[in-house]
Amino acid sequence: MEAYYAFVKKVVLAFNEAGLDYAFTGALATSFYGTPRTTSDIDVIVAMASEADVKAKLITALHRAGLAVDERKIDSALTSSFKIATFKDATSPYRIDVIFSSEKMDKRASKIAGLNTFFQAPEGLIAAKLRMIKATLPPERAAKDKTDIKGILKFTKVNLETVKKQAKKDKTLEVFEALGLNA
Image 1 (cartoon, rainbow, N blue to C red):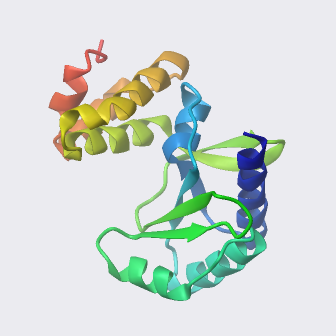
Image 2: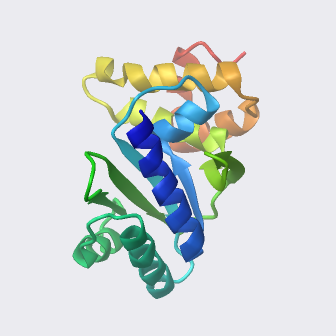
């Protein structure tokens, strides 16, 4: 686990130095807000203010963090509907999934290993997990996301009205209600 946190620390330092507008999401954010769990990647949302500026900053940050950078992956992600690019660490089995977002990012400031960083707001993280549960087939493969949501709600103050409003918009309210957590 030490190697994973060394990898996370490299990424935090590099993203901060590059001046990127970012927030961790996925398993790292779930572990921060809820119940810790293992993972071999980092999921990070990067805000897209100016495509050229973000691309240059991201390339600089990824190089500083020791990741293998293929600019074509960024270009492809920016033109795809998924907006995700994956990069592998040169010296470990870890990787980073960069999710490009043109929407206003709701994030929370915090620290990892004494370094200032940001996490996706818990309401947005839950909304993303609800969308994954709805899309995952077969449904039993979504157990991890259900457990993640329960952990976040157990250990973090969450605005349930915000979650429900987003779930209604995303057409995942039924998924949320089926978890029995909307009290």
